[in-house]
Image 1 (cartoon, rainbow over the protein chains, first blue to last red):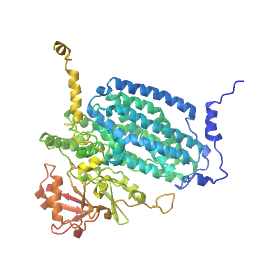
Image 2: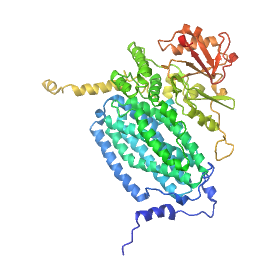
Image 3: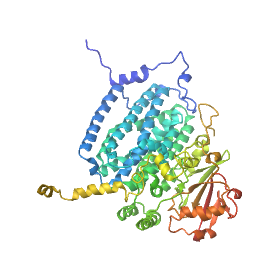
Image 4: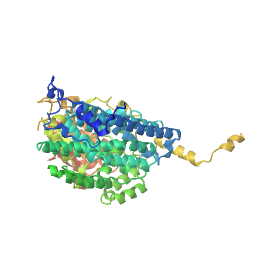
Length: 511
Length: 113
């Protein structure tokens, strides 16, 4: 007799309701110790509705299919010298930033979603967290596999996870995620799933994936497609989780609003690295940071927060500052990297005339007046054999850990200095947004591992720059410094030259 | 507000206490109006450092990487310490003139002074 098969809906219901039980030998509070301390009140876990209702068997089947496609492309890329198809070797700096800065975060996300899959009291949310945990591990692995092809030829990617833990600009994404994973489960969901993966995700995804497509990097594009369906599930989890918190108890609203304010600002500051990548590192441009911000935050985010208004949620605090800064942050972050290229595992370079013309068109309010003169001075210095490097170590923001290069929202000629006092010490921040975050939880941020301060405490391999760079595993003269004169530039030019010259077949045969 | 934590009263190490800097304290300097230097600069300086050494040796060694730098302009520079106007005395040490751990020194040169 044939056994009756369960429908997908029935399977999902068993997985998220039927298999769960009320504990009787142990107290629920002991089993789920993280569930209450943040002050969030949940009355009915069964009210959690997962719009995807994915079951384990369909999950595996679906992922295996995507994996097969991705690895076929990676294989063909390796066999057909895909590295020759990119627009220019400078494009690879976007990929370097990705593997150094973002891939390790995928792994951290995998770990923390596994933690949530154990520690959230509701079985429906636990199952969603478990699947996301597996997704994140898969993303980490597939990114490494995809990018490993470039690592055979190009610099700066060889020790990405070691660098992630030590290099000054990578402490920005690292500390961002550490902040989230050291928070409670509901703040984590609001920070990563909602603020980052829902509100700001297009500002990461579009620049990197469209950037890859525009610049001939088919491997990264394929990875992007392979991750896209997972990302839409993650986005939905973020939005549904926040709605669920807001619907469960009115007293959750101010707590969630505070987290939205905080994580909007944290995410936005982190994205300033992406803004620089987008405006400066893509030889063929997708759109400007300013345009992306308008489309993906001001328009889409505006609609989202209008929708959440019925719960009493308003737009994140300092959205107006982010708007005021959109003509500046990519240029200011590029200036940081240009200042400190000797201490970074990405290259920077002279902005050529064509690139400047694009910038003038995209940033009529700021580029020609403020940033172009700076770049022309640097060009002049480089021409005289005095390529500008900053010999001091920068002052870092205590919260976002970015060098304090951002200017006052209403005056791009003045650095925005903010300072707080806590237990007799001063703490400097780059903005009102970061200062608010520090002032709310100073106990957390006084523990920040600021790379510059650690160097001066003697914890980073030595007192000289070469010693510190060795400690970070930077191959000096290859990973760092200007693109002009780098081994990478030399190799790329040789490849391109090889393509232009006629094959020497007859001459060789005649000998 | 106190940190929401699993263990009430939680606190962690303050990572940048002055005693962690082997006799030095951190001082931040910034040359206003010259953003070719992208941000303020962090210096580990003992409080016994004379202001004269900062002005005549340390600052020129950092900022002369920019052709617009003129060391002699420091003689007429305008200074601020932690947000207040400041008239430093070259003969006195930083510590004697109120420069503490993680103090911020800003200065304006040329027409901006």
